[in-house]
Length: 105
Image 1 (cartoon, one colour):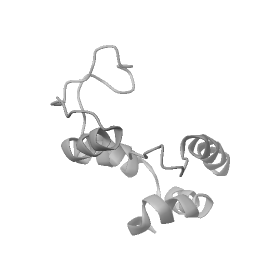
Image 2 (image 1 turned 30 degrees about the vertical axis):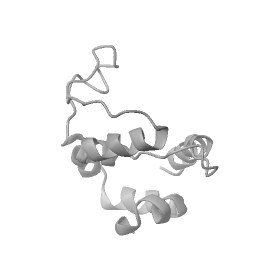
Image 3 (image 1 turned 45 degrees about the horizontal axis):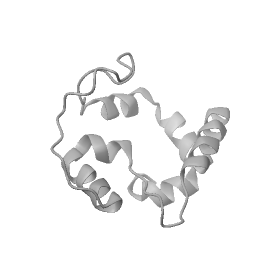
Image 4 (image 1 turned 90 degrees about the vertical axis):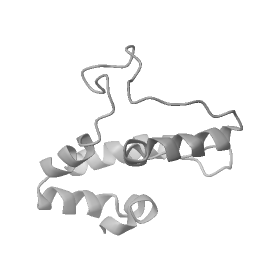
């Protein structure tokens, strides 16, 4: 599990910049509140809002994403992890949890 956390951290660190020119959108927020999250993204980009649909582009990777937004996928992923696995993830990624998921610590 620790190796997976190190790999995850290396990916996240490349994506997150706090330079005012980037925005971080959490997958969970996009799934739970797509309208609010997309509105936030439109405002950040300074573009006109366009309506969104829960039908995804058929060009998306169907084996992973599917063709519809699945609001239960996040719960399924959390339910897969044992409490020991969750504790190990929180240990290795504590700083990211403090920043993005403080309620889960």
